[in-house]
Amino acid sequence: MNKRKAKWIAIPFIIMLMGIFFINIINRDKEVSISENRTLQQMPTIKDIKQGKFISKFENYFSDQFAFREELSNFYTNVKMALGANKIKSYYVLDNNWILPTPAKIISDKDLKATADQINELSKIGKDTNKQIFYASTPHKESMLSHLYPKYTNGLDNSLNNKNKFKEYINKDIVKFIDVDKYFLNKFSKSEMENLYFKTDHHWNGIGAFEGFKNIIEEMNIVDNVSWDNYTTTLFDKGYFLGSYNKNLNKIVKVDETIPYVHLKDKPKYKYFKYNGKTEKEVNEEDVVATRRNEDEILYGGAYMFGNACSILKIRNENALCNKKIIIFRDSYQAPTSWLYADIFSEVQLVDPRYTETLGMSIDEIMRDSDADIAMFMFDNTDFKMMIDVMKEQRQKN
Image (cartoon, rainbow, N blue to C red; front, side):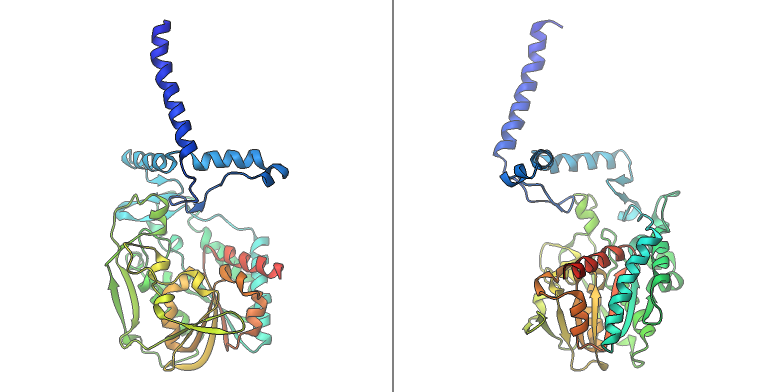
């Protein structure tokens, strides 16, 4: 190659590199990645130099803040889809706009026993304060829709196997375990199961939540005068439902999903209270339920209830079917059932362990000090260990 040809190649390349360099300098750093649903690394500080973390953090910073990072990721995703790939990042993008996650990994017996021990210890505190204790395992989309995965996908039984082993370590003398997963698999066909979940999100929808709730109430055997025929379904389709999986894939699936709400035909006037462990403050329904329902893009939490509303949220209903109070340690699968519980119990106390740090109370204290008659742990069968680990960490801090 002669010098003249080399210049025609080298000069544009150098200009391109310098252009990208200057764009990276003037670009404002982003705080979060929408597609990855995580916080991005910010510029390292002098403190990082002193702690010997500057180089590693700067490498992560450069990678996270690289110009056009999101755009290039989105382009790569679209190219893979165009070439017929059904596995994008850690998700399967399947027929009829279904998005499913990579199956969960097996959890060791040792870890499952330690996880169950946390529930047993907290349940003992609840029992010692005269509470009935229940654990409701809710059926994650991954394990209920395994028939949608490509053939020969490994690990499709992992979530259920983890849950079943965890169940064996729960102290049955104190805790009644309600296996909603088993109920779903026995009651619904594969096609019926598909109607109970959002296509592009990891949660059940309001209809699936209602079906699970019915099983929970029947297994609790607290009330026997529930008329399920008094419930109706309202379909909300004014905004675009942005499922969590679709959000992480840069909205690759273009499907408009309807958001279903199941509620009593004559909806009671619920009262809502934020409780900080000492005092409570009444709040409006629109401050805690379906807070993002009028936005153009509606996330699952915005459609039903965000976890940060449940540091401790109390819902009261003067016309409930029984005068008992229930405290529920919950994850996001609980969200569409808030009104449903309030129809049954005079007071529902919702506690999301991920948002209790500001209360200045440990999970033990929340359990012990609650005046509820019933305590329930309500976690899905795939992420239950993560939620219980959050409680464990919070307990150790206090």
